[in-house]
Length: 477
Image (cartoon, rainbow, N blue to C red):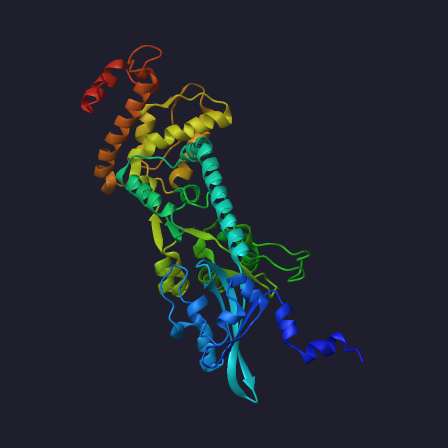
């Protein structure tokens, strides 16, 4: 009677072992080979009659990929013979008869008979093609990275123009306190560290955040801004983390939050001191674990963001009052940057005003060339509680009302307190010197006449010459 295929396999299980494409070694408890299938012979070049009954570690597994010895006592196959545990290995090599090696992935499994460990089997395959593919992929990725760097280099001019546009909106100054801030900005920009920007309203905290993002390694990605003071506690949570459809009344569709939108980029949380304690707790978790759930959802969403925050509040004092979580404060306060108030760098005022006026000329279609000296003194003596934003508003009103090329500030500004007058006089002298030099350069150092600097400054020629002598202003040779 003719046997079926199944019966033939059951009668001789070696038929199956000989047919598979993976190499198979069988070992007794002493580590001697008791079975070697044709695929193993083909991959290694070692034949059955050469290895059966031999301790074959010395033939096919004697060394690591770098040629250093691989003792049998460290071999994973032999470890299975001792403890009966299954092991999967993917970072070793087997050696051929001709002395060459090839990378392998193999599994060792114990062999039992009536609950007694009698040996082990190793099933392996040659992964040379897989490793070559991985190497080719790494090469392609490296080429792609090089191309990206080349494109970034070609984009330098455009990025420079963008940076200049930001500078012209107010992030300018030569004062010591401002230069110290810029040094801190340069240091932290190339890192992925969390930044906390501290400063009064109107000091340019968002400009600082944007400058950090655009100098960072994430500059090609998005910077997403959230004003934490613009939303109620419930709405802010949805704004930050998103919500699922039906999460609350009015949630008619699933919506991504700002954290998702900022993935692989930068998230700027302005007015961070306005966060509710509940939102603070959730923010802390995202910072720690880089994951969150949408409002009304259970799916965990992972993100990779760089966090920049800003506030005009004293967070340390809020921590003392129990209004701000201490653990979150220390998470945010990794690298604090202080945005100086305008009154603390009053010598920068002429330069800032010049930049603002140039922007206003474009915006309003005007051609203001300078601010007269009397107006500069008035601006420099003011305390500027609203900082650069207040200066922008005042200058915009004056530019709108101006009929000539020289700006004459008509608005009444509060005087400085007498206690700060002495330091203000020193700063004013520096500011006045800078302003006069700027106008002289614009007029090509011509003092008198219709196109002269004295005319633009609203001064008699003799007064301007006297001021130049007093301030040690000399035309460069």
